[in-house]
Length: 352
Ligand code: NAD
Image (tube, rainbow, N blue to C red; front, side, top):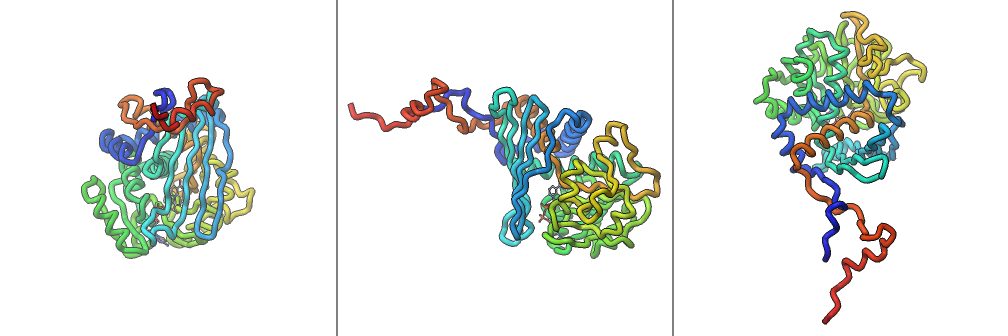
């Protein structure tokens, strides 16, 4: 069988290649690098095509497509969210994505994005906290110790200077896993028996649980003045983590309001409840934390521009290192209009 011509191959980053890239660059540096790319793209927010992600809901979960473009490049991510998967040995969140040239539609890069989603979500969370949390925050409660948890903890260490993480999960095995994985990090790791115990002395509270329900991971009485809440796990209609009373007391910051009103914690509030767009805080157009007693809440759901920025970051890294595989994804007839004729490349050889 004839090989496609070299120009037809799409650079592909496999899971193996992504793992190797993380080790070569270093996790802290990669999280910081992705955060810088996200911030750069948030600062040119108006240049992007934006739409709430396209979601296909089912009783057990959701499958979503997340597209955006800056006019030069187009990106999309395929991602799911199925909290019950873990019981069957599968991940709650799995993803892959693509970056393409707008002027031709030709793909630039195709990549795994399960690891990349964990990295970009953690980078985004820590970036938001850098703008919203009190600068003297050194202790973070980490409620929900699943697949995202270590990435979150390490991003807050690298980007916000967090020194202690206080872990809680309803499944002690999950907490033990995170404690084991973070044992070699510079973070001080404390295992806790309850959410209440975990938030003791914490200036930042991250909730990153998975349950397809309007859960109450945090109640209002647990949240003291001056705390920053990084609410990651409520990201789908009917899937929230915080008691509504917390939302009423907090200054609320979001990525893209039309999507967050559907998916975020604020789905519990009136549709005109005031929220601030994070990009405006980064651009100096809106105030972030009002004062040191305010409760700030980043109602994270994950927005396409964050994935676009992460794709750009990975593309720049792999272009520099040439570590992609060649994926035979695109048909490449010798004459662009002779797609049918291209089939002959795979025709069985005629007997002489
Ligand atoms: P996971 O299934 O691997 O882990 C979730 C953990 O939450 C489990 O260990 C579970 O035992 C724990 N948990 C469930 N209910 C709890 C409760 N009431 N209190 C304490 N712990 C509880 O999932 P994951 O991949 O770590 O993702 C976590 C959440 O983050 C999911 O809901 C996912 O959809 C969401 N997520 C959001 C973004 C974003 O950008 N906002 C990105 C990725 C994932």
